[in-house]
Image (tube, rainbow, N blue to C red):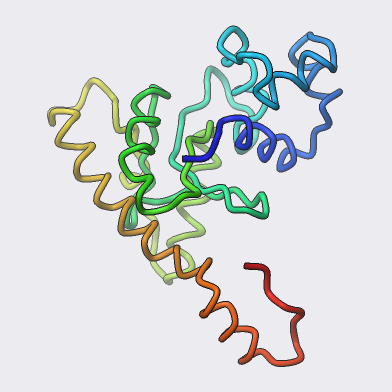
Amino acid sequence: MRDESEVWQALLKRKGLSVTDLAAQLGVTRQHAHRLLTGRRPAETQRAELEVALAMGSPGSGHPLYAIGELDDLGELDLVPAGDAQPLFADREVATRVALDVDAASRHVCVVPVWPTYAWRNLVAFHAAWGADPEPRKLFVVDDTDDELPLDVVLEEIRTGFEATLRARTLAHDPDLLDEVHTRLGGYTTRLPQ
């Protein structure tokens, strides 16, 4: 599983923020913010503020939720659907447990704070790529305590979906397939990163 400091830095870059911008949002010095981002200072006391500032999407009210994501070696960060659904988590610890369980399917897996609107738009884009209409019920909070099903049953079901998605995505990192794509595209591309 990717280190949390790598995820913080990728989120900072994705948001287009500088360390100085983040420090101002957190009300700390630039040096303190840098230490939080790099993991040289424990984030526990300011985790909630960091997550609000860096969560994927436009800030909403309250606290962001958590999604399983993938952070590749080039710093690209994406949400990972479980099959055709986008499970979210209210509790970061539950999301971390699931990420650790599916870590064998991808060394890029991580936990990402995300605003629900962003997760919905990501799900819509995923379905649009297949020419299908998205269903709001396919975006849900896994550890919502109002559900009738036991949490462990739901976790096992989505774990299977995450693993299938992650195994399919490993093809995007396969050097032989990247070479084949490069060859097929001929002079239209530069060498694809591996």
